[in-house]
Length: 407
Ligand code: NAP
Ligand code: MG
Image (cartoon, rainbow, N blue to C red; front, side, top):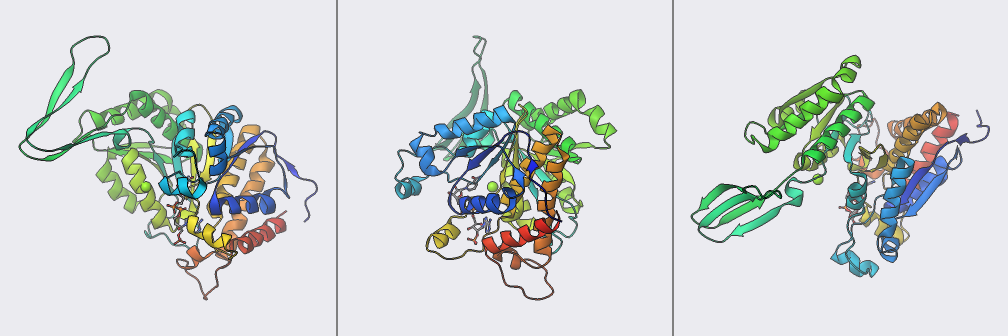
């Protein structure tokens, strides 16, 4: 059935364009799957590396503030500047990662979820539903100080209170020879906002929340994570979770890892920073492909930013620049857009927008399940007969045909 008129998306979505192959796919997805069907109000920020350079990275800060203002944003992958990129793009300086800048302003937690497809079997056959991962994106080894100990000496940890009371000091080790030292920290405020975001996400997605730390060994550091999660749960979530039939579960991180292997999924795994960094890559690979991993930044200030978990797919872009067709997978980009449309629809109370976003998602999954897919998936799909990979534009067109047939 033909669609009469376009579906109106009531309020603004903040759109952040990006770099390389994801920028190419970004334009295709909007052109083919969104603009023909939706009356969208986009507030656009161009985070292309050259524009970040031109605006002295002001555009990234403006974009983050716009997400705070409007509540929902969607971001394309962006290049994080490095020495090589400074040469390649003739940059003024090595600009900070846009994701780090945006996270700094929105103060959020990043959640990742795999897109499940029947013919892409997870490496673990027990997993039937997504395992969502929530990574605490503050502190620990990511904001550390390290010392290379060159020879014998005493290593101490010292805290000097601002109120002039006595410093607290402890000996870490009396070194008898060379070694290494590391100092890390976290803050109660950041741990609490991480806990809040995890319970809010679990409640929103209707999944149990699991959290693991090494509290038996780390009796102050990790135990504080455990205690703050417990107090946040008791204070603000216990009642809600119990009426929704949901559980919060804390145990040792080792125990969680063992249980993750046996679960059928359908849970949010809250991870400390390092655990989340490592485990999210393990999950992405085990569920099939980085191109099937979606990501959302949930801010305790009540806003959401959706993106693909992967980067700009640099090598495919260089082929594209040479005029070659590439078989790059746009699934996570498509789902970043549908994620933000569903959230916009929920906040605006416009079920027609949510339904349309679900149609795109179903169409994309059915396209793959019918045997039309990009090269990364052909390699891992269980197919009846050998199929040929399609190019990005062919894949998006095939999804579009299904979307059109559902209207
Ligand atoms: P990447 O872009 O994720 O790509 C790594 C590899 O994964 C690719 O070479 C490709 O493998 C495969 N891959 C990833 N996405 C794919 C897709 N959609 N379809 C098919 N294959 C896909 O990571 P990277 O090469 O480490 O980083 C490239 C740039 O992205 C860097 O400048 C980095 O700063 C940036 N980055 C940005 C973000 C972000 O904005 N959130 C995140 C990560 C990285 P094959 O080459 O084997 O096909
Ligand atoms: Mg990692």
